[in-house]
Amino acid sequence: MNDFFKLKENRTTVTKELVAGLTTFFAMVYIIFVNPAILTNAGTLDNPMPHGAIFLATIIATVIGTLVMGLFANVPYALAPGMGLNAMFTYTICKGMGFAWQEALGMVFICGLINIIITVTKIRKMIVRAIPENLQFAIGGGIGLFIAYIGVKNAGMLTFTADPNHWFAIPGGGVVVDSTIVPSLVDFSSTVPILAVIGLVISIVLMLLKVRGAILIGIIATTLIGIPLGVTDLSPLKTLFQDIGKPFQELGTTFGAGFRGIGTLFQDASKIPMALLAIFALSLTDTFDTIGTFIGTGRRSGIFTDEDIAAVENSKGFKTKMEKALFADSIATSVGAIFGTSNTTTYVESSAGIEAGGRTGLTSVFTAAFFLLCVFLAPVAAVVPGAATAPALIVVGVLMAGSFKDINWSDFSEAVPAFFTALLMTLAYNISIGIAFGFIFYVIVKLCQRKAKEIHPVLWGSAGLFLIYFLLTALDGAGII
Image (cartoon, rainbow, N blue to C red; front, side, top):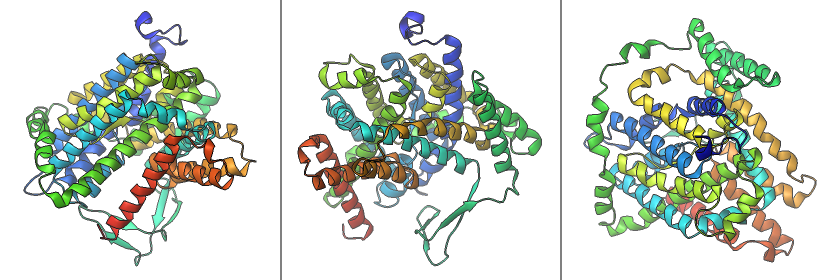
């Protein structure tokens, strides 16, 4: 095991990797419950997308993708169906554009093939090398703010007030509110944010005392404290062995459904432009989410060194960890689509395990093993409340925000793209949107400085594609296309 994962070379141990894997698992296990809740809305009364099948597909995609990442690339990253991408699948492609969920799965499968092609042909690797160092640091710090914001939201520490004249309902449930919405801190009359604050204090104290496995200990301690407070719900344990076989029966409905969806996807010529737009949007978002996560977390932790990133463009085959990690991520989306879930991508929550000491693929193997247990022991994982994992995300956000110190904020030309990268990544609740604005403003800055030659062709192309995507999205929203 030491030779395969190179534990000594990476200054880690089996115990450290186990703790890191468990930490990553708890930080992202929510996806096996959230993903089915979102994707079931993609179905209709006469064409439902079964909850149990999505639950299993989510776990299977997570396990396979994470194992490939750990065993092939030997890096401590976990993969799962991406948040935001699942919402795009449901509310944009199925509810908004009117595609059946089978057709949407077909799009996801095609998206995965595109990601494989651009990885094998080094287009994805060129993108990594094309991102200026200044923006790489901004991406790292921005991801820190983003996951800290996720933590604050999961902790129930925020409330939002909307003008009743400035919101509208969307198909499938929920509402869309414009910028008149005002966030504020809750009054802490509920035990959920109180528990989260207690957990946050515990985690911070343990970190300051440099206790090994501080983040994981904080999650467990907060979960236990939540029992007498009534936040930690132990009732799922009562149904531990009930209806275990039902999800397996339903899996037959979604398994391979994407192939049937591809068969009908391009039959209606009027839908082809929207289908291509959807595939483009999925691929673009998936690619930049992954690259942003790798650069933002890997560079800071030393998992991907400057030499490793530089070798991506110059080496042939899959010699570097970055190349192998990008390839592992690229095949996960198609695998997930085959079983019945939206795009599978590298999770930013992997940074929780990295901060807990994870440095090799053994961390990913442990994470995958814990997810596999959820097939039969899902109620156990459900016991851990969001208020217990939220402090971990906030603490990791604090650590990752350190990347901002390497940005030359006194140089306005560097500050502008870096600032918008971090700001929009957090406020738009989307890593790709932040990267898009960073790229676009970087191009604008260089043009104004008459330094167009310094703009890498990949940045030119990416900024242009992002602008086209925003334009087509605006035209679609206006009902023009």
